[in-house]
Length: 241
Ligand code: MN
Image 1: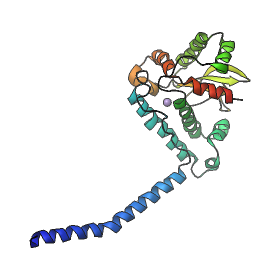
Image 2 (image 1 turned 30 degrees about the horizontal axis):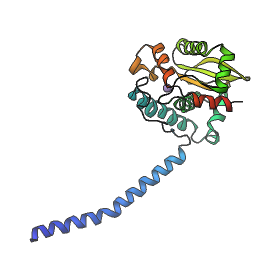
Image 3 (image 1 turned 90 degrees about the vertical axis):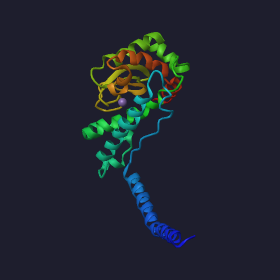
Image 4 (image 1 turned 45 degrees about the vertical axis):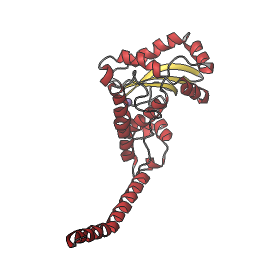
């Protein structure tokens, strides 16, 4: 090793060791920042229970990425901002939703958005579709006559919801009913015109289908039946009061 190379090596070593405490410190600061952010962030974005492309070709990968990572994430972030430092931060999401008339519009919109989307992801799956079995199948037949008639009425509730909103199948006084709500409202909200325990929910906001279907909401709804997770809907039906 000549003198020039030797000096370079010494310089390199001393740069690394001089940097080390600093970088450790930075890491400590950023870990602590992450932790304090998590403490403040009461509500969290649940991970999608399948890959972004799992619902292809009916719901495309890019729609799922934007819908979950941007739209749902924004509802969660804005809900956290709205409750931070208030007595609402000590409430569960269900408590906020069921007493929503007491709370500000930001909690109604973003809390509803968080609740609705958290449910929506679980009600779909790869290779879903078909028909429910067991108690839910019996209840659908006794409430609507046939599975086909139920599908027609539910699809119609989604297609005719003006502007943005959701179509729902709910359990209401022990029976099934179909309806819809505007914006991010849902049938658990005390202010809702249509009430009940959601068994099935369909997002008919344009952001749910516009990239693939543009203005053709009816076509999105028709294809959505191919990804419905009936096992999850049946479980919700059995557990609903
Ligand atoms: Mn949505």
